[in-house]
Length: 201
Length: 201
DNA sequence: TATTGGTTAGTGAGTGATAACTAATAGGGT
DNA sequence: ACCCTATTAGTTATCACTCACTAACCAATA
Image (tube, each protein chain N blue to C red):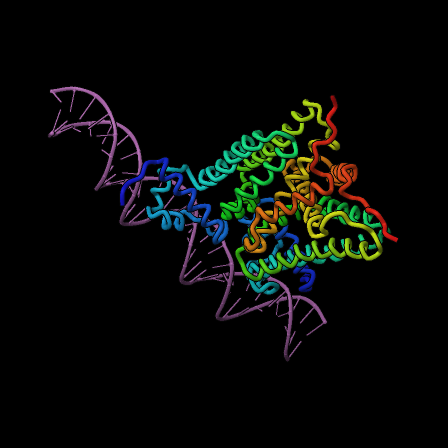
């Protein structure tokens, strides 16, 4: 077996870590099992990561970076409603493509009992919310009338995304998530939760 | 120290288990630590529970039983909106009184890699959703016009509750949850998400 | 006196991490 | 083109420790 560069190996290790968490739970994520799957020995893992928590940090980084991609994608759209819809649907697409990631996202307790990891997770959640709020505020700047506190609406939207993904996960990824999400979006729109409001000119 | 009855001891063990999960995470929930906190030895724990999973089952049972209480309380209200509001606010009250429980609720991954526990968690989530749907349907029966699929609206409401509690937890339980929830409910009402709709007579 | 809730002492299996050492690789000087 | 050297990616062997769980025995209670 050929030697890999640190970058390649790091990617591989994080991939396998995510898979283990998904398939057998965080409790089963041991350096032993991880090294077995990667195909190198335990100490070799420590060539690439300081310790176990450092690996978890790597996983969180991935989610964080995806957030930026999400935001850029949402901003390409014209109206506020379209931006929000893109933001939400992108989430569903992300998880539909990477179901393993749901296991990580719904294992928050992993992160909450280590200060460094907790901070990182907090930043991640704030990032998502800030993005949404920013979408609202820049629309407001352009004269769109938002009914309701952007902070509240952001929380509501994020809650909906989370719950939908959780439900999908609990039903063992049966129905297509994106389809379920689209139906939900229609319901939301029908109720007037997603609308561009009145434009003041 | 007087010997306790099984019922009392079981309660005590579950209480301490929840506390450990809350304070140090599920990873720190060991029979050793648990017995130390309860004030008995490790094997004594096994006099009251079959194994570790059996203790977790006990925790899930508590959440389940609270659900029934929740539902009864919601049904005392007159209109659909009031019922839904009561359902939501009761959740916030529950968690505000028992912040430790948030740690359990957001540690789903504990339950998801053991078939029996996974089933129990699935039932729990279905229970909550069935309750909401039932509220919608009995209102529909009385002629109230619901805009949107009750299934979808239920998911949205549950998502909102979860996200609000998660946010509260992430901010280290700072702001009063019930107050935050009330404000959120107003936003929701203002947006028309919670309304009794048109009554057909 | 029988049952129940407790004890002490011990099991095998698995944990994250480290010390000591080696094979592979990339780059610069001749 | 060739060797030499520093660095990097890997190895084997082992550490000290924790895990869930059990057998055997004992004392308090009903």
